[in-house]
Every structure is written in C-alpha cells, then in structure tokens.
Image 1 (cartoon, helix red, strand yellow):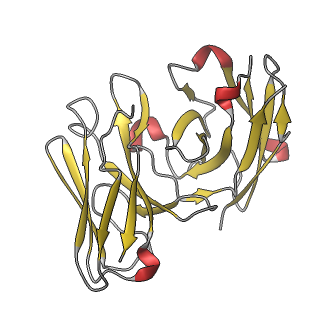
Image 2 (tube, helix red, strand yellow):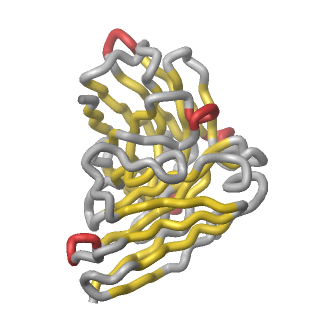
Length: 110
Length: 124
C-alpha cells in the first residue's frame, strides 16, 4: 500500500493527451514539491518532472506537471508509442521524514 | 556527468547482512551538490526509498527500516556503502543508488542520475 495513490494503468491512442493523477495528503504533496519518474522495463527510472512542473533538459515539452492542494498530475500530450512506460510520482513526507512513492501507473499506447 | 554503479552480492541467505557499494564518478562525494540515496524495487512492484547521505555527512533513513540500515561514504574512494541486516526473502529487489543535487530533506526526492541497479535475491 503506497502512501501516494496512482491509478495502476492508463491508456491512450497516438496523438491523444493523457493525464496520470497522484493523490496524497497534507503531510506530503500538500507541503512539498512533486517529482515524476519514467521507467521502461528492465531499466532504471529517469527523472521526468521536478519541482511540480519543471522539465529537465532533454525531456520533451509534451510532458507537463501540475499540483493543486494534495494532488498532482502528469500530462502527456501528443502521445507516442515510445511513451509506453511506468510513471511514478514521489515527494517528501513530513510525517515519515522521508520520500514516499506512488504505486506507479503503467501507460499503454493503443 | 555523474555516473553511479552498484556492486554487491546477487544472492544472500535469510538472516545474513547485505552490503552494497555505490561507486560514483564525475563528481566528488564532498561536493556541495552531492547527495546519494539508495532506492529499491521488488520485482514487479513500486519504488521504495531506503536511505540518503549528503555531502555534509548528514544521513536519513526510511523509518520502517531504520533499525536494519546503515549508510556511509568513503570520499577518497568515491563510494557510498549501504548495509542491511537480517535479510529476508521479502527484501528481494533491484537496489539502485541515485544522485541528488541537494539534500533531499530540503529539496525533495530529486534524483537526476541513477545506477543501473543490482538485483539481490534472498534465498536459502
């Protein structure tokens, strides 16, 4: 049972816009920055979004992040087949004094 | 560019102590922008943060595993070592070391470089 709640799966067709939600509480998302990671099978996760909405160099602007209250979202526009991966949200939790992760959302491009 | 590589045993027996080493290149462990976390991922499951050490030697641990974990660093060797005692089959996972450009207790779980990971299986 993860501290942050993500839908286990999401899907879309090429070109579509999909969003992945991440729900938390006042002790984590409500107080701290949210980060998003992308993981392909058999590989290490990769930083996708930091400080709620900032993209590292090299991450396409099709990826965007937002946060409101105790929830956050990752949006992927112009969906492409190579976006098929598992996406994790994470943030610092004040009560646990450490980072917590969501359970991950497997994105399928139909 | 910072690169990290994990090393250690692929197989440990229940009750044994696991020792993993993360060798870092590209930036000194004493750099003001250098923190290293260990994160694990059981097969088919989510990520779990274990421990973090910053350039100031400040350390933090997952509260539920704190009694079993020790993180340390040898700046001269550019290595960060994680030990986990009393291993159990539920600890079977891929263990990653990651780099943070700031203390995660201040800036959050910002991991901009990851090692390839090492799969550790706990079995008798």
